[in-house]
Structures are given as structure tokens and as C-alpha cells.
Amino acid sequence: MSVLVFAESSEGKFKKTAFEVVSYGKKVAEQLGTNVVALTINANDSSELYTYGAEKVVTVSNDALNTFNAKQYAAIVTEVAKAQSATVVVVDSSIDGLYLAPLVAVDLEAGCVSNVVAAPSSTSPFTVKRKTFSNKTFSNTVISTDHKVIGVAKNSYGVHENPVAGSTEAFEPAIAASGVTSEKVERVTGKVTIADADIVVSAGRGLKGPENWGMIEELADVLGAASACSKPVSDLGWRPHSEHVGQTGKPVAANLYIAIGISGAIQHLAGINASKVKVVINTDPEAPFFKAADYGIVGDAFEVVPKLIEKLKAFKAS
Amino acid sequence: MKILVCISHVPDTTSKINFTENDTKFDTNGVQFVINPYDEFCLTRAMWFKEKQGATVTIVNVGGAETEPTLRKALAIGADNAIRVNVNPTDGLQVAKELAAVVKNGGYDLVLAGKESADYNGQMVPGMLASLTDFNFINGCVGIEVDGRSVSATREIDGGNETLSSNLPLVIGGQKGVVEEKDLRIPNMRGIMMARKKPLQVIEGVGATAATSVQSFEKPAPKGAVKLVDADNVDELISLLHNEAKVI
Image (cartoon, rainbow over all chains, first blue to last red; front, side, top):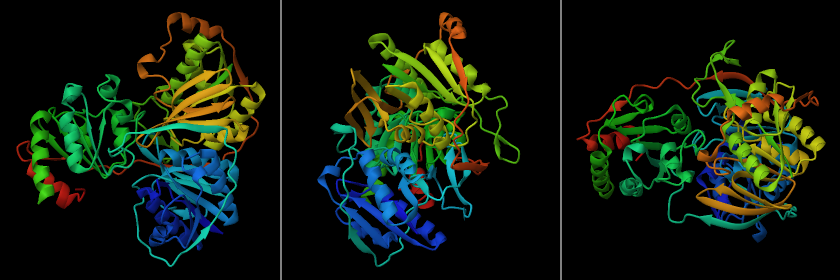
């Protein structure tokens, strides 16, 4: 028996979530009295995962796998899970992780639970806590199958160092026929993405127009943050809908979420609930967002944000 | 082209979520149920295919009789017929297995489903359905074009988009972008009248079992009051974020 963790990487480098899922896998393995095995696909230095408790790392290197393909990746995860006698498979809740998990679950005849926020509260019955109802609630969920697939929500368990003297084992899988071919990948380069960001600066209709987004982007730059927007702003076409944060937009589980000129509709709050610290800047002291926020400034964004940028620059320089 | 659109019956996005029976059951009292917003994008895209390229559009839900008003609304938007699988499912695998039986019996070319439902947010049904039927699968789809049996689809990836090609049969896990929100269809009076006469077939399930079950629900712990900082004193905010919250 073992716990298998798929440690996601991009262009050879691990995503931060890879360290979080290995940390999580280590905890589950301890609870089950077994070992954690990590699987990497085209990662440059897999030994990094020993730091977080991976006793064994199974490495796959194949240029045909440079672009994520759910069916091919799922076949590899399944094959390695079987070879390692893994009863629990852990993935992250990234776009690709959520694409992969249900395919692996069917292949392993496993119960599947995503958006998991804590280590199992019990391993018999196997019970995990996950976010449901668009982050408004949690559900304590029992997985009753022998095999289990768990998708860990970003920034929920945290990254925990647990150094071990691990070993690496290369694996050469057969590449499955996929039926779906990647034709083109277009990424916005040089910008922090909402999925990866620890800090997100988001703005709403209070900004009055797309021409005023310069200061939002400048604030995001100073903080090393991603910029985002509320739904009305994306509906008005002021910003691309890839920046729309909320229940039907992107969920945000950042360490810091700064909302500027956003009143805080219930659907927006559902999308950002999982963020740890929330700051609201709004002219309306009655804006519902203040009830959900940790810190707030009642004030005009056009006065507060430039001051904040200037002071943060000085703070960063000090 | 035969299109199947999977419709989840979910609480309206503004609903307050409460529980009964010692926090073990979702409290439906006073809750308005709607077509799952992610499914609504898919349904509208299916209407587009029907009108521009010719297709029949069937909608399907796995659920009890209480979900029929939601199916009627989808029929009023323009779907040709509806199937309700008379099962009260408790997890995504059970739903996927019941849907897989419908797909296998129906000879569908394209299955459209929201990438997740707005209640349990598991994001597993489209992928499991594709695996169980051996259909191709594209998740997080923000654009889809079909030409004969060839499909070009775009999915969202971290920080961008990926264009993919596939053949039918195909399962799509869709989201906003498959159509824009401004293009969503609202049922008109004629559609509502016609929907009453459209076939809504109720079938019994194949007996699929769930792999997971909710033991109890919890609400997040109540939050303390917001700490307000004077607009003229952003230094204090920076200090709080650095020293107290430790996030910058």
C-alpha cells in the first residue's frame, strides 16, 4: 500500500501546489502507516520533493508529454498507482488537476473528492472535508471505495517541510492514444496568473471605466500580484472574462485579496471566500463586502490607490 | 448531429445555504432552483448548433420529480426533448454512471455539460462520463466549433488558452465563453407554451451506486468585524498587512 501524489510542473519547474500536495500526501501516508510516492512528468529536478516527504519519486521524461493531455496523463497516473499499490491518489485542484482526477478515478474504480481543504479527519471510514456550495460551506465526505482520488484545494493544507532521504525511479510509460490533440497554446507571458498568485488585486465598477485600470495594474505589479475584476466589469467588456472572479468565474484562494470598488455580491464573495486575508476599498461604508473583509478603507479608490502604490513602493524599497 | 445537454438542478447563485437534521441535509426551504449556470452556457451553445448547423437537442437530468420545472425551463429555451433519470444521486460517479447509460442508449454525437455544478462543485461528472463511454473529452471549454465529425475547441489553461482538435463523439465540460453571458437565452412565452407539449421521458436508473457520501455539512466559522483604517492613513494598512496578517 502507498499514497501516490501527482506533482504538477510547468516547463520543468514544480508549481507551488506540487509541494502542497506532496505535504498533504505525506500526512495521509502517516495516517495510513505507509509511504508516499510522488510522480513527476518532465520535471527538471524531482529530488526537490524529498524536502516535503516523498520517500520515492517516480519520474517520467518524454517530450511527447510536454503539453498536458488529460487522457495520456491519467493513463500514466493510473499505471503508476497500480505499480506502486497506491490506494490513495492525490492531485491538486488546478485546471489540469481537475481535468485529470475524474479520469483517474474511473480507471481505478475510485471514489473522487475535489476541493479538499484538510487532511482526513478519519481513515476508517475515510473522511475528508471539502468546499461545497461555491465555497459557502464545507461537506465532510466519506469515500467508501478501496481506492480514493483526492483533489487538494490550493492554499488549504499548506506547504510543510518534512525532509526524507528519498530515492528516484525512472519510468517509461507507453503513451496512450488520446483522441484529443493540442493545436496551439497561447499564454499571457510576463503576468502573474490568478491561479498561481498569492496576492490578487481586483477591481469593480467603482473604477468607472477601463481607462482607469492602469493604477490597478500598477498596484498589482508593486505587490507581485495578479489583477482581476468583478463580473459586471467583465460583462461590460472593460476587462477580459479570464479575469472575472466569482461563482461562475475564477475562484481565488490567495493569501491576500484586495477588492477595490467592488460592492461584494454574494456570487463574488463565493468566489473569493477561500482567500485568507481580504482588504476592501470602497466609497460606500454599507457595501456588503465590508462584512466579509478583514481590513477596510472607506474611501475613493482614485485617492486611496495612488497613495497605496506610493507607500508600498517605499515599503518594498526599505 | 445528436446533442445531449446535461442539466443540473441547483440552488440559485444568490441562495443562502442552510442545513437541517443536525447539519446532515441541505435545507431546500425558500430556495429557488435554477438550471446550473455552467449548463446554461452549454444549452445555449447547443441551440446555436441546432439553428445554424442542424441538430437535435436532448436534455437530461438525474434527479427526482422536483427537478422537472428546471427541465421544462430548458425545453422552453429550445431543447427538443427531455429525459429525467428517476434517481436521487448522492455523488458524481453515480450521476456519471446513470448518464453513461443514457448516452450509450441514445447514440449521441456530442455531450455538453457544465464543467461543474454550482452546488457540489465536484468537477467530475463530464470527465467520468467521457471515460465510462469512451468518448473524447475536453474540459473547461470556452469555445467549440463542429465541422462534420471534426471539432475545434478552446479550453482555458492557467494564464491563457489552448486550442484542441478532436473528432466526435465528444464530451465537453463547458463554462462561460462557450457562449457569452449576454447571449444566454431567456424563455419567451411561445417557448414556455411549446415546452408544455414537448416530451419529457422519465426512465428508471440502471442502479449505479455512489462511491462517496456526505456525512455532515459545516459552515465556515463566523468572521470577526472588519478593521477599518482611515483613508488618509494607508501606512497603517501596510503595517497591518505586514505585521499582523503577515501577507506582504
